[in-house]
Image (cartoon, rainbow, N blue to C red; front, side, top):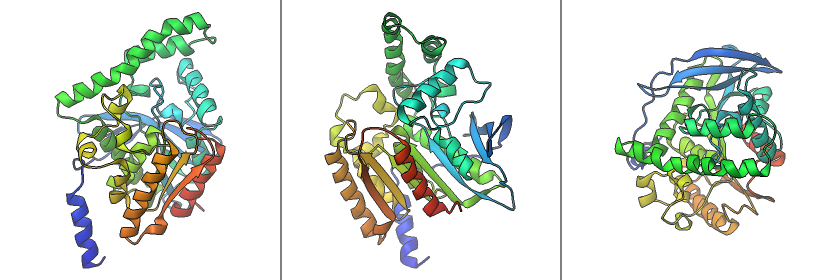
Length: 354
């Protein structure tokens, strides 16, 4: 690396708008294993901080070994105002999972992913995949959320009257995000920064595995997962590339008072000083793909186009214009089979699965 490049990297590091992230040694323990076609699903537990151990799924392709190291992926689940599942939004639940979790997961996948469990598809292709859960989702959800899920997906589809009766509980769970943010803030912790540090810890899990090629680690996320993905790729030097599907906007469109959903992604220090497309300041010159739907009502095309233009300027200033791909697909807020093909093609081209 040239002297000027070293100085530039130091200046960028000094200007980071998030707290330094120092993940602990992961100390991975396998709790359960389930064989699947071409790979296995492992329920693992690992350290995300000095005092916290998390559980999630780790998918390991057949044949992965010290002699045949595979690329690793961190897949980051969405928000969707659906909190009873987290990792199960990307991985098919283990057979030992509660029935209401299996039903909830299947409904989510059919609605948003054209019936495809993307993490399982990537593992079958040869990637080692980990899917960290954000606080308040899945195995880290609240008691009220689990109660809602058990009533919603515990048996036969509910009639309209029963669905209406569940609505207040669902609203209570949704608004509970504010309490999580406030509780953490009172302890001096930013929820979204904590999530970022936990996602970095998932990268460390991959790096600790003897069958993962440490030089070939990438990330993907849809919706809120896309937001998590561009933060992770920007602020973790070990992530070589990423794909963000259906999350990019201008902060002028997110006016106060914020909806409860904003608080799971809110980093006040960044929100004060930067706009969302400014993330490219820290992403560049890494290869990256942004995808957005032309009919996405959450992220209007005109705003996304402006964001894409600003991000391209950052990459051009680093002489890396060709490394940032910003594309639109015909459709809404969705991660369908065609979009999944684009995701896989990008990851393959950078991480060299073959």
